[in-house]
Amino acid sequence: MTFEELKQKALSLPYQPGVYLMQDKQGTVIYVGKAKKLHNRVSQYFQDSSAHTPKTRKMVSNIDHFDTIVARSEFEALVLECSLIKRHMPKYNILLKDDKGYPYLRIDLKQEYPVMELSNRVSDDGASYFGPFGGRYITQKVIDTLCKTFRLPLCSKKFPKDIGRDRVCLNFHMNHCDGWCQKGKDAEEYRRRILQAVKLLQGNYSEVSAELRSNMEQAAEKLEFERAAELRDRLSAIESLGQKQLVTAGRMADMDVIGYAKTEAKACFAVLHFLDGNLIDKEYEIVELTDDEQEAVSSLTKQFYMARKAAPREILLPYEMEDADLFSQLLLEQLGRKVTIRTPQRGDNRRLLELSQKNAMEEAERLTTKAERLNGTVKLLSDMLGHSLHRLEAYDISNIAGTDIVASMTVFQDGKPKKSDYKKFKLKGLEDQDDYASMRQVLNRRFTHYQAGDKGFDEFPDALLIDGGIVHAEAVREEIEGLGISLPIYGMVKDNRHRTRALVTPDGKEISISSIPAVFAFIGRIQEETHRFAITYHRSLRSKRITGSTLSEIPGIGETRSKALLKHFKSITAIRAARLSELEKVLPKNAAQAVYDHFHSQE
Image 1: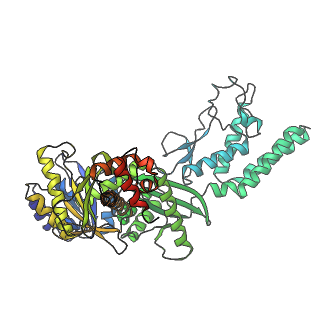
Image 2: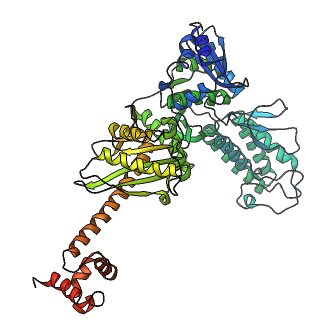
């Protein structure tokens, strides 16, 4: 379908809730969205593209056709959207890669030596499953706690295959395990302890305690004091465990705090799990970058809890979720518990959100390399301007009161300065300070060299950055168009601290960069480097001119003798301090005397 056909189809949609599926030419679903009113939402994609984010513009450019499903209510549309996103995993939806859900604790009692292990899903395999408890860390903590309490194996050995094959490990020597890998161990005792662990997981603390107390008393009556002491210690550990550790470790968090942060190249979605006000676990995932952080948090939060089939009683979000009430209702229907979703603006809960945001940023920064930051910044700027920026050229003019007018050209390739391609220009035929005429001359010379195929000028830039505003950009465009050349040109508009706050096109379109730190800093570096290169060249010329004029005032000293003196002595200060005999080594005696007298006549 053509763009106009897509637009007309969108305008013909009903004002009813539903879901829309954008598809490319191959029929692949590239985006799934939900709408209160299909007509209003879908038609927005085919209106003025300047209001779209770069990602949305790219997605729209790939749409060949779309389908819609009308729902009876917005709630039904939400359920359908979640289901379709999971089924199609569309390219332009923000997706969580980890959809494994909360892990369960699995024990297969059919095995000769059952073990406690993590399982991402409950399967119909005859094993016993407990949980979910929360994240993988919490579930592993439950397993470790039970194994240490009952002195069961924490290692990766397989029983009975590995019995007697190796020496006991460190866990045995630390009294965390009874060394079941040794020969002669009682398999029935192993199973008895596993069954006691199962009873604890089922909440039967009193039954396990009564059983151990009875066994302890029987051992004491038989004068098996060592075994009685062992059972006493285990009973004490279990009673303590039942009151504290397992209760905490085995509970779902009562509050989750969502964080979302991004660098130039990566974004991180983080979830902090709190129980009774204490942080007990953290989960995070690096996700695709997007301009719309509110939409990202909303979409990722839905996927996170729908995949895990579990949720706390309260979820705190850094941004408002537009359909929070509907999603809360969906969780109630699917999980059987009421979940409150809030975005606190102040107080302790707001500080928890800030903590979660900080955790997300730390993970994103930790996993972002310097090269990725630079590439991400260039890509972000490219998306803002709407074209590639493989090679950027920047220009600046430097002079004092119209004297020694020079210009600099710096080159940034893939975001990095390419100093071998820098160029310096000494302006010709300009008596007064005229930045517009100077810029015209510089760009005319640069692209005349390009058209002639001159070495050092033979690469064509993707865009030009001009030090100045709209008038400078317009003057440059007119000049290069006169040579038959067309390319994007941007003036660098300054703020009151002489930093580039925006880029402006010759047509007057201003692109603000001050609110995007990475791009603001990148353009600032280009501006500073171009200015530094120009002013260094200007100072060099000015110094040579002043030096040359000082020596040329001396009778008998022309350009050749001036150069010879500077080559030998390196500076005017050294020439001034030289003895007559030293000057005579460079100049004839009469000329050397004239130089010496010039600098020492007042003495």
